[in-house]
Image 1 (cartoon, chains in turn cyan, yellow):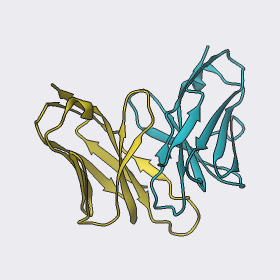
Image 2 (tube, chains in turn orange, yellow):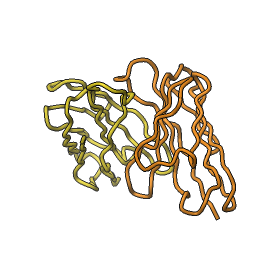
Image 3 (tube, chains in turn blue, brown):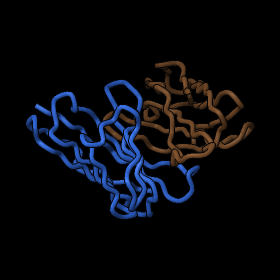
Image 4 (cartoon, chains in turn cyan, green):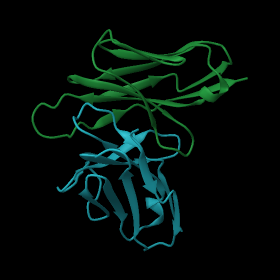
Length: 116
Length: 115
């Protein structure tokens, strides 16, 4: 149980392109979803938190117009990196949580984004 | 500000050589402490949640314990397939406002078990 699917697993695209990443909870309803960024050999950095049907809450220093988050249903959240540049290249990971806030987050397998 | 420090940064063990990983934390009020395992190129896999000092959880060769300042992940007779990065994260109690129970992660311990 508690499976989270993230797609695509890898994206390579040209600078200036917008890229959409999907995160789906397959066997539970996710009231809250989280988006993280992870640099090589570093831990996870939280970018934003989203609740179904409401606007995402972004962490300090994360540009909301750059990283658009939509959480339209209890099983799907999307992250769109707009007008991506090489410095946006990173490993992006989503997580989903059901129910109460002290329940564990379950993570997708990440998306490796490479901007040329 | 919540802080999580994991030690050691890297640990090399021989198969069967038991050891412990440490997670020290500072948090205004602990709602939960979480252990995850992360394999290269993958997302973290949930292992345990601990909610109060004195609590212990076990799963196969892993056992997690919690005090008011730190948590230990004990690995008994490890096998090469236990090689991974182990992440510890804390969740603070929400004192007004809404943080939606976000996690603060440590830097992780890279465990390598040699056959």
